[in-house]
Length: 257
Image 1 (cartoon, rainbow, N blue to C red):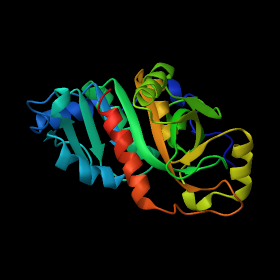
Image 2: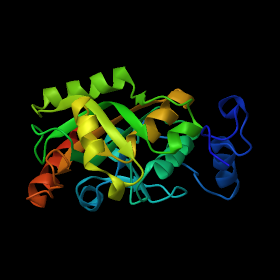
Image 3: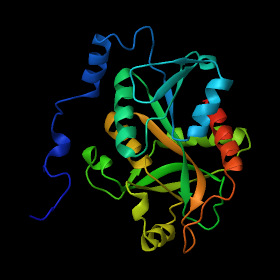
Image 4: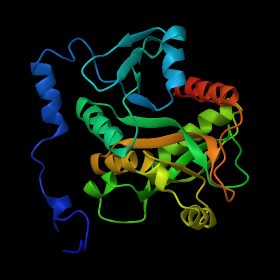
């Protein structure tokens, strides 16, 4: 039987869901979790392990249990900014965390991650603030009807860009290609999206932006170019130390939001 549309149920997006993130937060509270702690206004979803190792040593932070991975509230922000990491990769895990955070009371979520470069003028260490994502993953289709792109929150993207400008951190604003399967990226796809002007390739942005649209939450992503699909062959980043430094710079600016 051929699959004519996805998701399979024709009224998927109009139907109430059985399990909600609100019910899950209630369940965790009933189990004794999330006591004496308030939801941060903004959460940085950090997909780079180097920052997750570095920042608890530099910043005073309160650890929060009850979520997948490691979750901290930054004391210098009075708990208004949280940092999550070590939860895995891909759109499903990011979407589920975003659901739980918005159910708890968080208003803004930004991804910080390494990504592949798609344009020849983007070098390792260059920063992309994503304003939209190609939906080449599965998660977003459970939140929004099929379309090629999903947008980040324009106001949040502007806010991030202004923050980087104030700190003299050069960055590009543009789209990313979000895929579930990095080992299935073809040269032809890379060229097609490159010609459309897409700047980077990642796994999570489309999923996060879709949850943001569906749940009326502000979302964006900050991607640091590591490897590249811009030339006929994949090329690895030449120097991880400079990438690590750039990720730290981006992280520190995000903690000032």
